[in-house]
Length: 307
Length: 111
Image (cartoon, rainbow over all chains, first blue to last red; front, side):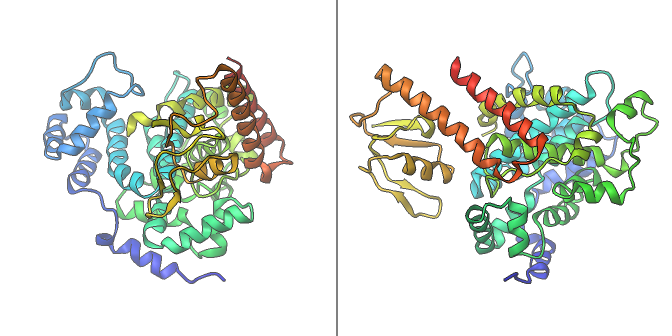
Protein backbone atom coordinates (compact mmCIF):
# COMPACT_ATOMS: atom_id res chain seq x y z
CA UNK A 1 0.00 0.00 0.00
CA UNK A 2 1.50 3.24 -1.17
CA UNK A 3 1.65 5.88 1.48
CA UNK A 4 0.71 9.43 0.74
CA UNK A 5 3.97 10.94 1.83
CA UNK A 6 4.38 13.59 -0.81
CA UNK A 7 3.24 16.53 1.31
CA UNK A 8 5.08 15.30 4.35
CA UNK A 9 8.37 14.92 2.52
CA UNK A 10 7.97 18.22 0.73
CA UNK A 11 7.35 20.04 3.98
CA UNK A 12 10.45 18.36 5.41
CA UNK A 13 12.41 19.75 2.48
CA UNK A 14 10.87 23.17 2.98
CA UNK A 15 11.57 23.23 6.71
CA UNK A 16 15.22 23.88 6.31
CA UNK A 17 15.97 23.87 10.03
CA UNK A 18 15.05 20.20 9.99
CA UNK A 19 17.49 19.42 7.27
CA UNK A 20 21.15 18.92 6.78
CA UNK A 21 21.70 22.55 5.93
CA UNK A 22 24.94 23.85 4.63
CA UNK A 23 27.04 25.68 7.16
CA UNK A 24 26.69 29.43 6.94
CA UNK A 25 30.19 29.96 5.57
CA UNK A 26 29.67 27.48 2.78
CA UNK A 27 26.49 29.26 1.85
CA UNK A 28 28.26 32.59 1.68
CA UNK A 29 31.17 31.26 -0.30
CA UNK A 30 28.82 29.55 -2.67
CA UNK A 31 27.10 32.84 -3.42
CA UNK A 32 30.38 34.68 -3.69
CA UNK A 33 31.74 32.28 -6.23
CA UNK A 34 28.88 33.01 -8.57
CA UNK A 35 30.43 36.47 -8.68
CA UNK A 36 33.56 36.50 -10.82
CA UNK A 37 34.76 39.79 -9.43
CA UNK A 38 35.41 38.49 -5.91
CA UNK A 39 39.08 37.83 -5.18
CA UNK A 40 40.50 34.50 -4.16
CA UNK A 41 42.01 36.10 -1.08
CA UNK A 42 38.63 37.23 0.08
CA UNK A 43 37.18 33.75 -0.26
CA UNK A 44 40.28 32.27 1.35
CA UNK A 45 39.94 34.53 4.36
CA UNK A 46 36.29 33.69 4.72
CA UNK A 47 37.10 29.99 4.59
CA UNK A 48 39.75 30.06 7.25
CA UNK A 49 36.92 31.06 9.58
CA UNK A 50 35.59 27.54 9.28
CA UNK A 51 38.51 25.51 10.54
CA UNK A 52 37.06 22.09 9.85
CA UNK A 53 36.20 23.13 6.31
CA UNK A 54 39.73 24.45 5.72
CA UNK A 55 41.20 21.24 7.06
CA UNK A 56 39.00 19.16 4.79
CA UNK A 57 39.85 21.22 1.73
CA UNK A 58 43.56 20.84 2.38
CA UNK A 59 43.11 17.12 2.96
CA UNK A 60 41.27 16.68 -0.32
CA UNK A 61 43.67 18.92 -2.22
CA UNK A 62 46.52 16.79 -0.93
CA UNK A 63 44.83 13.50 -1.77
CA UNK A 64 46.34 11.43 -4.59
CA UNK A 65 43.23 12.05 -6.65
CA UNK A 66 44.24 15.65 -7.33
CA UNK A 67 47.83 14.60 -7.64
CA UNK A 68 49.80 17.75 -6.93
CA UNK A 69 53.52 17.00 -6.69
CA UNK A 70 54.01 18.81 -3.37
CA UNK A 71 52.00 19.06 -0.20
CA UNK A 72 49.93 22.20 -0.07
CA UNK A 73 49.52 23.88 3.31
CA UNK A 74 48.31 27.30 2.25
CA UNK A 75 44.60 27.63 1.70
CA UNK A 76 44.88 30.58 -0.68
CA UNK A 77 47.36 28.67 -2.80
CA UNK A 78 45.01 25.71 -2.83
CA UNK A 79 42.24 27.95 -4.10
CA UNK A 80 44.39 29.34 -6.90
CA UNK A 81 45.60 25.90 -7.95
CA UNK A 82 42.18 24.34 -7.92
CA UNK A 83 40.11 27.08 -9.45
CA UNK A 84 36.64 28.02 -8.39
CA UNK A 85 34.74 25.14 -10.00
CA UNK A 86 36.82 22.46 -8.37
CA UNK A 87 36.68 24.36 -5.14
CA UNK A 88 32.94 24.52 -5.31
CA UNK A 89 32.72 20.79 -5.79
CA UNK A 90 35.02 20.28 -2.81
CA UNK A 91 32.84 22.55 -0.70
CA UNK A 92 29.77 20.62 -1.71
CA UNK A 93 31.63 17.40 -1.01
CA UNK A 94 32.71 18.44 2.43
CA UNK A 95 29.28 19.69 3.39
CA UNK A 96 27.53 16.39 2.80
CA UNK A 97 30.57 14.40 3.79
CA UNK A 98 30.06 13.66 7.46
CA UNK A 99 26.31 13.47 7.36
CA UNK A 100 26.27 10.87 4.61
CA UNK A 101 29.09 8.85 6.10
CA UNK A 102 27.38 8.62 9.45
CA UNK A 103 23.95 7.77 8.10
CA UNK A 104 24.79 5.27 5.43
CA UNK A 105 28.37 4.39 4.68
CA UNK A 106 27.51 2.39 1.58
CA UNK A 107 25.67 5.36 0.07
CA UNK A 108 28.64 7.59 0.70
CA UNK A 109 30.95 5.16 -1.08
CA UNK A 110 28.50 4.78 -3.94
CA UNK A 111 28.19 8.57 -4.32
CA UNK A 112 31.89 9.23 -4.14
CA UNK A 113 32.63 6.46 -6.61
CA UNK A 114 30.01 7.89 -8.99
CA UNK A 115 31.54 11.33 -8.68
CA UNK A 116 35.04 10.08 -9.49
CA UNK A 117 33.62 8.03 -12.37
CA UNK A 118 31.62 10.95 -13.78
CA UNK A 119 34.65 13.18 -13.70
CA UNK A 120 36.72 10.53 -15.45
CA UNK A 121 34.08 10.01 -18.16
CA UNK A 122 33.86 13.78 -18.73
CA UNK A 123 37.64 13.90 -19.01
CA UNK A 124 37.64 11.11 -21.58
CA UNK A 125 34.94 12.85 -23.61
CA UNK A 126 36.69 16.21 -23.44
CA UNK A 127 39.80 14.31 -24.44
CA UNK A 128 42.08 17.24 -23.75
CA UNK A 129 41.03 18.96 -26.95
CA UNK A 130 38.16 21.13 -25.94
CA UNK A 131 36.18 21.64 -22.83
CA UNK A 132 32.71 20.52 -23.81
CA UNK A 133 31.79 19.31 -20.35
CA UNK A 134 32.61 20.94 -17.04
CA UNK A 135 34.32 18.05 -15.27
CA UNK A 136 33.88 19.44 -11.78
CA UNK A 137 30.24 20.13 -12.34
CA UNK A 138 29.46 16.53 -13.20
CA UNK A 139 31.60 15.52 -10.23
CA UNK A 140 29.34 17.55 -7.96
CA UNK A 141 26.10 16.48 -9.58
CA UNK A 142 27.12 12.82 -9.26
CA UNK A 143 28.24 13.23 -5.71
CA UNK A 144 24.86 14.63 -4.82
CA UNK A 145 22.66 12.54 -7.13
CA UNK A 146 21.33 10.38 -4.28
CA UNK A 147 21.09 13.12 -1.67
CA UNK A 148 17.33 12.56 -1.73
CA UNK A 149 17.91 9.04 -0.36
CA UNK A 150 19.77 10.58 2.54
CA UNK A 151 16.77 12.75 3.39
CA UNK A 152 14.41 9.78 3.12
CA UNK A 153 16.78 7.65 5.21
CA UNK A 154 16.97 10.28 7.94
CA UNK A 155 13.40 11.55 8.01
CA UNK A 156 11.45 8.46 6.93
CA UNK A 157 13.57 5.66 8.23
CA UNK A 158 10.83 3.00 8.20
CA UNK A 159 9.90 3.71 4.61
CA UNK A 160 13.53 3.67 3.59
CA UNK A 161 14.09 0.30 5.24
CA UNK A 162 10.90 -1.00 3.65
CA UNK A 163 12.17 0.03 0.20
CA UNK A 164 15.50 -1.72 0.77
CA UNK A 165 13.73 -4.83 2.01
CA UNK A 166 11.34 -4.89 -0.94
CA UNK A 167 14.20 -4.39 -3.43
CA UNK A 168 16.16 -7.28 -1.90
CA UNK A 169 13.25 -9.67 -1.55
CA UNK A 170 11.62 -9.16 -4.91
CA UNK A 171 14.80 -8.39 -6.85
CA UNK A 172 14.07 -4.84 -7.90
CA UNK A 173 16.21 -1.81 -8.55
CA UNK A 174 15.85 0.80 -5.82
CA UNK A 175 13.83 3.26 -7.92
CA UNK A 176 11.24 0.60 -8.78
CA UNK A 177 10.84 -0.51 -5.15
CA UNK A 178 10.62 3.13 -4.13
CA UNK A 179 7.66 3.68 -6.46
CA UNK A 180 5.73 1.00 -4.62
CA UNK A 181 6.30 2.48 -1.18
CA UNK A 182 6.39 6.24 -1.70
CA UNK A 183 4.69 8.63 -4.07
CA UNK A 184 7.75 10.83 -4.41
CA UNK A 185 11.11 9.72 -5.71
CA UNK A 186 14.53 10.34 -4.17
CA UNK A 187 15.42 12.08 -7.41
CA UNK A 188 12.63 14.61 -6.88
CA UNK A 189 13.54 15.07 -3.22
CA UNK A 190 17.16 15.66 -4.24
CA UNK A 191 16.06 18.14 -6.86
CA UNK A 192 13.91 20.17 -4.45
CA UNK A 193 16.59 20.06 -1.78
CA UNK A 194 19.39 21.29 -4.04
CA UNK A 195 17.04 23.97 -5.34
CA UNK A 196 16.41 25.05 -1.74
CA UNK A 197 20.16 25.26 -1.36
CA UNK A 198 20.29 27.50 -4.43
CA UNK A 199 22.40 25.16 -6.47
CA UNK A 200 22.52 25.89 -10.19
CA UNK A 201 20.29 24.04 -12.65
CA UNK A 202 23.42 22.33 -13.97
CA UNK A 203 23.44 20.34 -10.73
CA UNK A 204 19.71 20.16 -9.94
CA UNK A 205 18.63 18.94 -13.39
CA UNK A 206 20.92 15.88 -13.59
CA UNK A 207 19.84 14.96 -10.04
CA UNK A 208 16.18 15.16 -11.00
CA UNK A 209 16.50 13.05 -14.13
CA UNK A 210 19.19 10.57 -13.12
CA UNK A 211 16.66 7.72 -13.38
CA UNK A 212 14.53 9.32 -16.09
CA UNK A 213 17.00 10.23 -18.78
CA UNK A 214 14.49 9.59 -21.56
CA UNK A 215 11.96 11.93 -19.97
CA UNK A 216 14.46 14.78 -20.14
CA UNK A 217 15.67 13.73 -23.58
CA UNK A 218 12.17 13.69 -25.04
CA UNK A 219 10.87 16.73 -23.19
CA UNK A 220 13.66 18.81 -24.55
CA UNK A 221 12.93 17.55 -28.06
CA UNK A 222 16.54 16.82 -28.59
CA UNK A 223 17.68 16.54 -32.19
CA UNK A 224 18.71 13.00 -33.15
CA UNK A 225 22.10 14.42 -34.11
CA UNK A 226 22.65 16.04 -30.76
CA UNK A 227 25.63 14.16 -29.46
CA UNK A 228 29.23 14.68 -28.46
CA UNK A 229 30.50 13.69 -31.89
CA UNK A 230 28.42 16.26 -33.75
CA UNK A 231 29.15 18.92 -31.14
CA UNK A 232 32.87 18.33 -31.56
CA UNK A 233 32.64 18.36 -35.35
CA UNK A 234 30.61 21.55 -35.42
CA UNK A 235 32.90 23.26 -32.96
CA UNK A 236 30.26 23.71 -30.30
CA UNK A 237 27.71 25.41 -32.52
CA UNK A 238 25.09 22.82 -31.71
CA UNK A 239 25.83 22.72 -28.05
CA UNK A 240 23.47 24.56 -25.82
CA UNK A 241 24.27 23.61 -22.30
CA UNK A 242 20.97 24.73 -20.83
CA UNK A 243 19.20 21.40 -21.20
CA UNK A 244 21.95 19.48 -19.30
CA UNK A 245 21.23 16.36 -21.34
CA UNK A 246 24.92 15.48 -21.56
CA UNK A 247 25.53 16.06 -17.85
CA UNK A 248 22.47 13.97 -16.97
CA UNK A 249 23.64 11.19 -19.27
CA UNK A 250 27.02 11.11 -17.52
CA UNK A 251 25.47 11.02 -14.04
CA UNK A 252 23.12 8.23 -15.12
CA UNK A 253 25.94 6.22 -16.70
CA UNK A 254 28.21 6.64 -13.65
CA UNK A 255 25.42 5.51 -11.34
CA UNK A 256 24.83 2.31 -13.29
CA UNK A 257 28.54 1.59 -13.65
CA UNK A 258 29.02 1.94 -9.88
CA UNK A 259 26.22 -0.56 -9.34
CA UNK A 260 27.62 -2.85 -12.02
CA UNK A 261 30.94 -2.97 -10.21
CA UNK A 262 29.16 -3.47 -6.89
CA UNK A 263 30.98 -0.62 -5.17
CA UNK A 264 29.18 0.88 -2.20
CA UNK A 265 25.52 0.23 -1.58
CA UNK A 266 22.77 2.59 -2.63
CA UNK A 267 19.71 0.61 -1.56
CA UNK A 268 19.60 -2.30 -3.99
CA UNK A 269 22.31 -4.48 -5.49
CA UNK A 270 20.49 -4.84 -8.81
CA UNK A 271 21.80 -3.15 -11.93
CA UNK A 272 19.55 -1.01 -14.07
CA UNK A 273 19.64 -0.76 -17.85
CA UNK A 274 21.82 1.82 -19.58
CA UNK A 275 19.58 3.30 -22.24
CA UNK A 276 20.96 3.34 -25.77
CA UNK A 277 20.19 7.05 -26.01
CA UNK A 278 22.76 7.72 -23.26
CA UNK A 279 25.45 5.94 -25.21
CA UNK A 280 24.41 7.80 -28.36
CA UNK A 281 24.34 11.24 -26.76
CA UNK A 282 27.78 10.67 -25.25
CA UNK A 283 29.10 9.13 -28.51
CA UNK A 284 30.71 6.31 -26.54
CA UNK A 285 31.62 3.07 -28.27
CA UNK A 286 32.27 -0.26 -26.59
CA UNK A 287 36.04 0.21 -26.68
CA UNK A 288 35.84 3.49 -24.80
CA UNK A 289 33.34 2.01 -22.37
CA UNK A 290 35.76 -0.83 -21.72
CA UNK A 291 38.61 1.59 -21.15
CA UNK A 292 36.44 3.57 -18.72
CA UNK A 293 35.40 0.48 -16.74
CA UNK A 294 38.96 -0.83 -16.54
CA UNK A 295 40.15 2.51 -15.22
CA UNK A 296 37.38 3.25 -12.71
CA UNK A 297 37.62 -0.25 -11.24
CA UNK A 298 40.76 0.86 -9.43
CA UNK A 299 39.11 3.98 -7.99
CA UNK A 300 37.73 1.63 -5.34
CA UNK A 301 41.18 1.65 -3.76
CA UNK A 302 41.15 5.45 -3.57
CA UNK A 303 37.81 5.92 -1.85
CA UNK A 304 39.32 5.92 1.63
CA UNK A 305 41.52 8.96 1.01
CA UNK A 306 38.44 11.08 1.38
CA UNK A 307 37.60 9.64 4.79
CA UNK B 1 43.13 -11.22 18.00
CA UNK B 2 43.62 -9.51 14.66
CA UNK B 3 41.71 -7.16 12.43
CA UNK B 4 41.09 -8.35 8.90
CA UNK B 5 39.17 -7.11 5.89
CA UNK B 6 35.90 -8.92 5.41
CA UNK B 7 37.11 -9.95 1.92
CA UNK B 8 39.87 -11.87 3.63
CA UNK B 9 37.59 -13.65 6.08
CA UNK B 10 37.24 -17.35 5.44
CA UNK B 11 35.12 -20.20 6.67
CA UNK B 12 36.31 -21.43 10.03
CA UNK B 13 37.53 -18.05 11.31
CA UNK B 14 36.37 -17.37 14.86
CA UNK B 15 35.12 -13.89 15.74
CA UNK B 16 37.14 -12.24 18.50
CA UNK B 17 34.63 -9.41 19.03
CA UNK B 18 30.91 -8.92 18.66
CA UNK B 19 29.78 -7.41 15.37
CA UNK B 20 27.49 -4.55 16.34
CA UNK B 21 25.37 -2.72 13.77
CA UNK B 22 24.86 1.03 13.73
CA UNK B 23 21.48 0.65 15.40
CA UNK B 24 23.06 -1.23 18.31
CA UNK B 25 21.89 -4.67 17.34
CA UNK B 26 24.48 -7.42 17.75
CA UNK B 27 24.65 -9.12 14.38
CA UNK B 28 27.03 -11.86 15.51
CA UNK B 29 28.54 -12.45 18.89
CA UNK B 30 32.17 -13.25 19.58
CA UNK B 31 33.32 -16.87 19.43
CA UNK B 32 31.05 -17.41 16.41
CA UNK B 33 32.68 -19.61 13.79
CA UNK B 34 32.20 -18.03 10.38
CA UNK B 35 30.53 -19.83 7.50
CA UNK B 36 30.19 -18.72 3.91
CA UNK B 37 26.64 -17.53 4.47
CA UNK B 38 27.57 -15.63 7.64
CA UNK B 39 30.38 -13.88 5.77
CA UNK B 40 27.87 -12.86 3.11
CA UNK B 41 25.52 -11.58 5.81
CA UNK B 42 28.32 -9.45 7.22
CA UNK B 43 29.16 -8.07 3.78
CA UNK B 44 25.52 -7.15 3.22
CA UNK B 45 25.64 -4.93 6.29
CA UNK B 46 28.45 -2.91 4.76
CA UNK B 47 30.91 -3.96 7.42
CA UNK B 48 34.41 -3.84 6.12
CA UNK B 49 36.58 -5.09 8.96
CA UNK B 50 36.13 -7.81 11.54
CA UNK B 51 38.22 -9.09 14.42
CA UNK B 52 39.08 -12.76 14.45
CA UNK B 53 40.97 -15.02 16.86
CA UNK B 54 44.55 -15.78 15.96
CA UNK B 55 44.12 -19.47 16.49
CA UNK B 56 41.04 -19.89 14.33
CA UNK B 57 41.18 -22.15 11.33
CA UNK B 58 41.37 -21.42 7.65
CA UNK B 59 44.41 -19.23 7.52
CA UNK B 60 46.24 -17.09 5.06
CA UNK B 61 49.55 -18.00 6.71
CA UNK B 62 49.10 -21.34 5.10
CA UNK B 63 49.95 -20.98 1.40
CA UNK B 64 47.60 -23.66 0.20
CA UNK B 65 44.61 -22.28 2.06
CA UNK B 66 45.55 -18.86 0.77
CA UNK B 67 45.36 -20.01 -2.83
CA UNK B 68 42.10 -21.83 -2.16
CA UNK B 69 40.72 -18.76 -0.49
CA UNK B 70 41.58 -16.63 -3.52
CA UNK B 71 39.82 -19.05 -5.80
CA UNK B 72 36.75 -19.02 -3.58
CA UNK B 73 36.86 -15.25 -3.41
CA UNK B 74 37.08 -15.00 -7.17
CA UNK B 75 34.17 -17.39 -7.63
CA UNK B 76 32.13 -15.42 -5.09
CA UNK B 77 32.89 -12.19 -6.91
CA UNK B 78 31.89 -13.67 -10.24
CA UNK B 79 28.65 -15.10 -8.94
CA UNK B 80 27.87 -11.75 -7.26
CA UNK B 81 28.18 -10.12 -10.68
CA UNK B 82 25.71 -12.58 -12.19
CA UNK B 83 23.29 -11.79 -9.38
CA UNK B 84 23.61 -8.02 -9.81
CA UNK B 85 22.89 -8.26 -13.54
CA UNK B 86 19.89 -10.54 -13.22
CA UNK B 87 17.36 -7.84 -14.23
CA UNK B 88 19.17 -6.86 -17.42
CA UNK B 89 20.03 -10.31 -18.72
CA UNK B 90 18.55 -9.91 -22.19
CA UNK B 91 20.08 -6.54 -23.00
CA UNK B 92 23.11 -6.72 -25.23
CA UNK B 93 24.89 -3.62 -23.93
CA UNK B 94 24.50 -4.79 -20.34
CA UNK B 95 25.72 -8.25 -21.27
CA UNK B 96 28.83 -6.61 -22.75
CA UNK B 97 29.41 -4.57 -19.62
CA UNK B 98 29.01 -7.66 -17.45
CA UNK B 99 31.61 -9.49 -19.50
CA UNK B 100 34.05 -6.58 -19.34
CA UNK B 101 33.78 -6.56 -15.55
CA UNK B 102 34.18 -10.32 -15.34
CA UNK B 103 37.35 -10.10 -17.42
CA UNK B 104 38.76 -7.47 -15.07
CA UNK B 105 38.04 -9.65 -12.01
CA UNK B 106 39.54 -12.74 -13.60
CA UNK B 107 42.62 -10.74 -14.58
CA UNK B 108 42.98 -9.27 -11.11
CA UNK B 109 43.04 -12.73 -9.56
CA UNK B 110 45.40 -14.20 -12.12
CA UNK B 111 48.13 -11.69 -11.23
